[in-house]
Image (cartoon, rainbow, N blue to C red; front, side, top):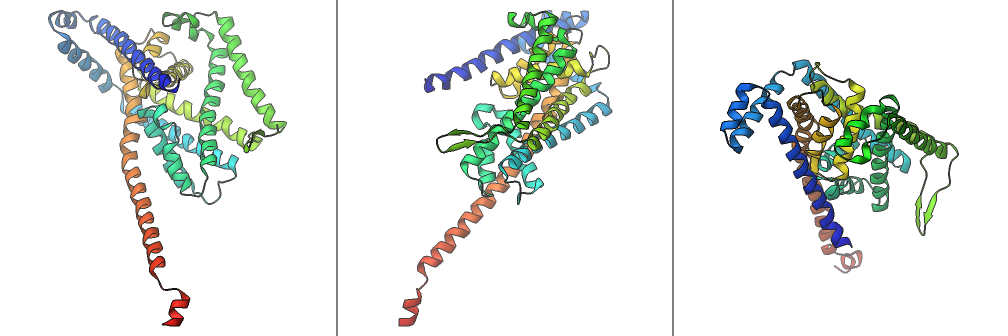
Length: 360
């Protein structure tokens, strides 16, 4: 079964990418063809020529984004990654291991973790590899790192459910356009609002469990402690803050004309980013575009694509480029420490004992 699953999820991701990219390319061609001059060029050209024409249209959309749009998108990125660092800090507080680990160390570890996992895919890193290397160097056990990774993932999921509940309650019509992608989304506004209240109820139930101090769950020697109110209260702030920051990058990169408002953009981001994670497509390529275009049919496809390009640049590509030197620097330091310990052990092994010194 494990070997089947190893092939199943990559296949699902590949199919999602192919389907989404094909759909997106078709929409971009239709929009570009709205200009009569461009339509004639598309009719006379081949595939490569069509791709270059569409790319030039998108480049024009990127060029007309005002400078303040890029500045606000950059600030939104800083907010998002600061909140992601808070995820790790919250988990360390839950484990009672936050003492002796600086905010800077946590922020760098979190930044590198998410820069890699967002780009390469959840199944490859899952936030575990980098965190294991970083936090075991600070004295955490493998079990503690596993709890930390799980709680960070839950904090993200909690924030997604909380904000999605508010979006469905306030904008229940947001699911209707997704019926073109899957019939499961073809629900009435009352049903969508009911789903929103159910999600909100789950969040409140989770909080109630913390307030009532539910006892730990024990599996043989493993103990899972229910988060206390000081942890849950931080989750209520950090998780929405990260998602609002990430969605803000797209919102500020979209043109004002036809913009449906931040709440709709936030809802589209929550649904599309979650779909990208479930499909295990790195960066949600194609999947996010398909969801955004379905939810916001009034926005030009090229404008949506340009805004998502800005999001990928700020949220994915630049952090990935910055994280690689950090990893190399950290591993170089760890290697130097390992050599130092090996040399010390070698010297101690060859040093004469007290008895030998006395005989000499």
